[in-house]
Amino acid sequence: MPKPQVEQSAPDAVETILEVSSEATSRVEGKLHDVNALIDKGESEDAWALCEEILKIPDLPLNTAVKAALLIKQIGGTEIADSVFSATYDKIKSRIDQLKDPERAMLPAAEALADMGHYDEAETLCQKALAQVPDNMTVAVGYAAFLVYRGRLDEAMQVANDYCDRTDRKFDATLHFATIFNHLNCDGPARACLELSSKHCKTSTQRAKLDFFLASQGMTTKKLDQHGMAVELFDGFAESYDKQLSKLDNNGPSMVFTALEELQLPKNASRRILDAGCGTGLCADFLRPYAKELFGVDLSVKMLEISREKGGYDFLARTDLSEIATYPEGTFNVIICADVLVYFGSLNTVLGNFGRILTPGGWLLLTVEHEGDPAVKTGFKLYPSGRHKHTVDYLTKTLAGAGFPKPKTIKHARLRNELGKPIFGTLVAVQKPALSFG
Image 1 (spheres, rainbow, N blue to C red):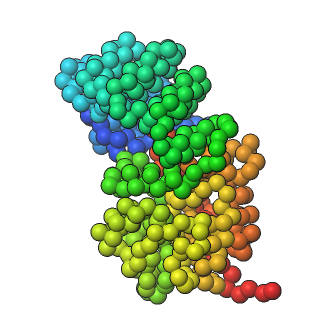
Image 2: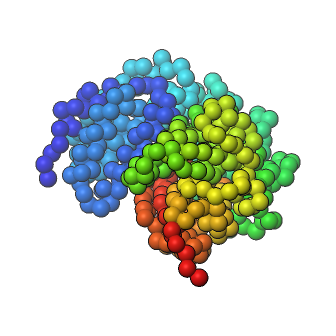
Image 3: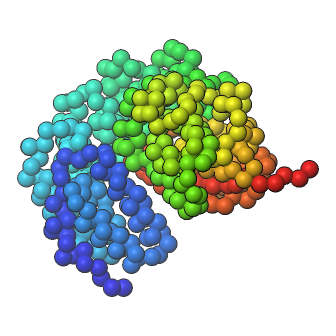
């Protein structure tokens, strides 16, 4: 196997920044996942090349450089990995007293130290960060996660309890820690936090959020209030929606844009287009060249208000996609539904509604989170994030039941990041039959 040129570039590559942003980290997370996938498939040379590419990224976050070095070591590059570790450790140690930002500097440095095996120094830095900003949830969660990885679950739970005692938003905090502990496979602390969430649950929409988490764990709940949860979630999220999706490195609109380009539909402003679940209007700009009339609909009034301020749509309306009576009047030549169907389990009603209002020969483009677990027999599964994942087989069968043929396009790609991990999605482009018989 030819040896890539990582060794020569290693000293420069570890000139990483000590204060990192979530945007900078999220841009690289997908590449690290790709390296892991290549290693799993035995494609070591391609993994080498991608690691080299990662290490040459300008302003590479130091904790990400260490993760790349760990992968390099896994495929036999021990000397190169040790060079990255040594340079990174020296850099952290030389500037550790200069780190000012607990979330963007101290926490990433502690993560890098832990990944290199310097656990005592990592813990000291975590404690310093939390002492400086005891009300910062990200820092508290980071320290709790460190303790989990060290096998100290009682101490991790104590960090969660202390934080939840300090905050006024006790329900949100306890449910967030429950989600984190569940993600880390810590059943005991997760259930303890859920019990606290139940005690602090005051409203019907909070009850809906809690029930969604419980349902994702296979626990008995009341009937899930999907509508109430969605309204509260997106109304509260509206002002910071674009910024937060940027931090998550959201790729949903890009998947739809790419699919439209590949379909080579004429950009002649001739179509009546529906952006179903338009949110703050992230798709409006690239839909405009195709549209004679561009409609945006959403369940959240606050999201619609932001879309109106941006001015990307000809018409905006509050619509529940599961209720055909709330849709705008008339039919559409194109329907876009990006990163919306994750909030539905069964898609029969929504896809049936789309089929009813789409003109013969019209196109439907949608994205979902990809469910690849063969143990999921229903075709979809609810996760603690409050979002569902759907299998390709379920999508194609449900589309067929709504009168659609085999999709023209089915593609998988990274949709966004969650808890530092890439979440993969499925894009489907399907054309309604131009003629219908019987």
